[in-house]
Structures are given as C-alpha cells and as structure tokens.
Length: 575
Image (cartoon, rainbow, N blue to C red; front, side, top):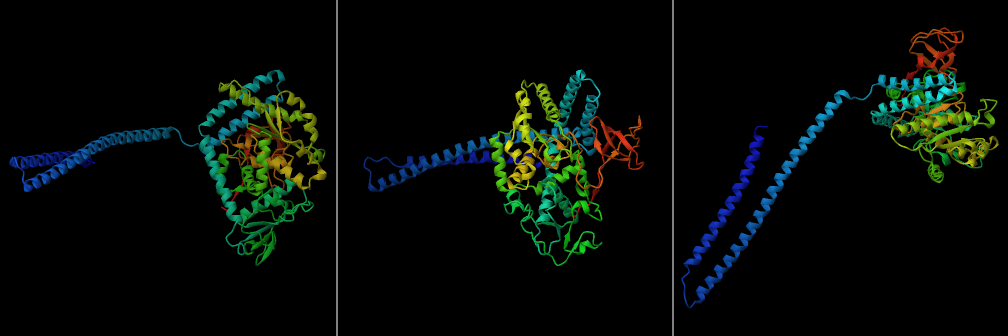
C-alpha cells in the first residue's frame, strides 16, 4: 500500500519528462537547420550544383515542418489523454467511495434486519388467524348493529399487519419459489429416468370408479407413494374415461407424466403388502387408498422430512402446499388447453383482484353436502372486497375496488336467477353459463364436460380468494393448486369453506396440537394440556372446533386459537 501513491507519482513525472524532451529535440533540430541555411553563400548567379543543394535543403525543411506538425498533434492528443486519465481517476475514486458507503450501509442495516425465522413466521400467521377467529366468535354472538364497528376494526388490523409483512414479502416469495422449483425438478427427475428398462416402477390404475376430482386425488396419492419409495410412477392414460368417444383424453387435457418412461414392464413384479422385501422388486402394483394394507407411513397428511422446515415456515397449511406441488405436476395443461385458457381469460376480461366462487349443487345435495344459498357464499365475497376497500382508503386511494367474481357452478340456475341482485349492486361475474350446462351428471363422462370442469378448476386456482364448500373435491383441487402460485402472499388462508374443513380422502389422521392448556367451561367442551393431540371433525365457524382427545377419548368443543396444526414428517426417497 505504501508504494502505490509513489508509483502513480512516478508515472506522472515520466510523462512530463517525455513531453519536455520532445520539445527540446524539436528546438535543437530547428536551430541546426537554420544554421545550415545561413552558411550557404549568397550568389547572384546560382550554379546547378548550388540549385541542387537548395532543393535538397528545401525538402529537408518540408520534412521538418511535417514532423513538427505531427509532434504538435501528438502533443495535443497526449494532453487530452492526460486530462481524460485525470477525470477517470477522479470518477473511479468517487465510485469506490460510493461503493464502500453502500457496503457499510448494507452491513449496518443487516445488524438490525435479518430474515425472519420459523418461530417469527408462525407467530405472525397466528396473529392473522386469531384475528379472524375472534371475528367469527363475535359475529355469532354480537348484535348486528355493533358488527360494522368490529368489521372496520378487523379490516384496519389486517392493513397494519400487511404493512408489517411487506418488509419480508420479497424474501418469502423467493424462498417459496426456490422450494417449489426444487420439488418440481425432483418429480421431473423421478418421472424421466435415463434407462426406463432398469428403473424401479410403481403402477397405479387411473380408472378408479368415481368422479373427476376423486380420480385426480387418487392419482396424487399414487404420486406421493412413488416419491416416498423413489419409484417412477406408471399410470395407463390411453384408456382413461373410455365412455367418451374421444380417444386418449388425458393428453388432450394434460401433459404426459413422463417423456422417457411409460412402459410397465420389468424383470420381476409384486403387489403392495405382499412382503417386506418390496425394494427387491422392479415393478410394484399400488392399490387405491381406500383399501391399502398395510398402511404406509407416508400416507397423507404426512409431508417429506427433507423439506419440512421450509414448508412449515412458509405455509400455514404444509400438507396442502405439498400436495398442491404434486397436483401442479399432474395437471400441467396441454398446449391446446393452455391456448384455450389464455383465450377464455382474454375474451372474458378476467383481471385481478378476483374472487373464485364455486357453488356445488346437483348430485351432492342430500348425499354428501347440504344446500347453501348464494347469500351464504356472497357474505364472504363481500367481506373480502370490504377489506380491500379499507386498504385503498388507508393508502389514500379514493376509489373502490371493482368487485370481480369468477363463478363456477354445476347449476345453471345460479347464473340465470341467483346472481341478478348482486349484479345490480355492482358485482361483475366472469365465466360462462355453458360450462355449467355441460356439468349435468348425465354428461360428466363426455369430453366437453370433462374439459370444462378442468377449465373451472384451473381458473379458480388462479383467483386471489376462493369461497366454496370443501365437501367438493373440485373446490379442494382448486385450493390445493392455488398454493403453488408465485405470489408474495401465503395462499393458505385465501379461502372460506362454508361447510367442511379441508381433508384428503383416505387420510389416516388429521389432528391439532395444543399450544395452550384449556379447562372445559361446560359439558360441551373438553379439557386438555399443552402438547396433547386433538382430532378435528369440523369447524364450528364460531371460534371452536368439534373433535376428540387422542388420550382421554373425550369428545366435544375446544377453542381454535389454543391449538395448531399437527404435522407428521417422514423421509421421502425422491429427495
């Protein structure tokens, strides 16, 4: 470091000496030429010899003049370069100082600002959830005349929570995106082995005797098994939905599961449950989830151990996020379906924010679900947009949010009659009644009906909030896929189900873990201690769950804010 300024000074002096010597040489040259010229004798009659000398001397003088002009030009150029060098050095010095200041500021800021840890993220989400739980508790008990005050207070609390969240949303989005990419690449590698003839395979029958949503969830269950056992999933799709006149229906709607391996062949094969040495067989036949025995340790709602920490940190519903990733791979739309979706959204002017509304009626009513009026759904659609209006007001935006709703329903009468009062109050409904008309149970094995239900699912999943009934597998599919969207917001709370809680058909156990002890206040409640595991049968939508105590076997109500999701993890071979 000591020699650096000396060396720079030496270079500057060398340039000065070089310029000085050049000027000295030029002066000596001119003086010499002048002396020679003066020594030529003056003669009135010039001989040829003398004339030749003058011509030669004149040529030398011309050469000298040209050299002088060249030296002067080089001198000017050198002076300009020296000036530029000086300016460049000054600019470089300024940039180095600015860079150092930025580094110091960044290091200084990092002292107080670091990325949130898992405990922080869990606590932050609980504040959001408990704000809603208190609202549900109050709206069931407080007279309507007081609810406008409570609603406005809740909306403003949400705005302030969002302000706090904004600081770390970019980090949250990046971490979720990186994790999503990691999972998708792992599934792609598993499904595209280099040598299909040698790859270990898991065979799954796609034609489970049930509806579309049920079949896709069955396929997702098979994919989970394939990922846990590190086997390439083989599912025959060419005969799927054979009642349709269209052939190879799967490839018309979705992309193939694999580009390199679709053959179920292998040198040996066995069935699940045939013995303990399953890993010694190349081909394994896997049953539907309803009849599986013995029950595998990775059955839903288990999540992969290798990614559990990040998933728990980034999602309020870790299993739903994970199964959403599986479904995101399964339901990658075909090129034709992608083109259709783009055109449909363009033709219907679908924009954001938008609420997805799924109204399931027809064959579900009286069997798997109760009848719910459109008013019950729209109450929560209205609540969502009221929240956005308060956000705009707090930001100083004097404008109401346009109330867009994407309507998906299997009952055309919802389009023709039930939405009219809401359209008159300012709501704009997007979608197409023709999709509902093809959803009639008698048409559901036709290609057009199947195509349209896929359109509804994919478009619902792209909405910013969903209001539906979780008794419907279509609604659960849309919500699961919604978790894979590349957004700064954790989408695990972007829904309201007016009937069931979330569940995965055939799941082993859905439980809650107590984080606060509770003593029953009446015969309808159950008591528990911190760390106890409680089952959940349903959400009462009033601040309480209905369930049972795993240890005491007592059944009853317990406060939702005193428990958190019970999460089981197991190692998955794919990772």
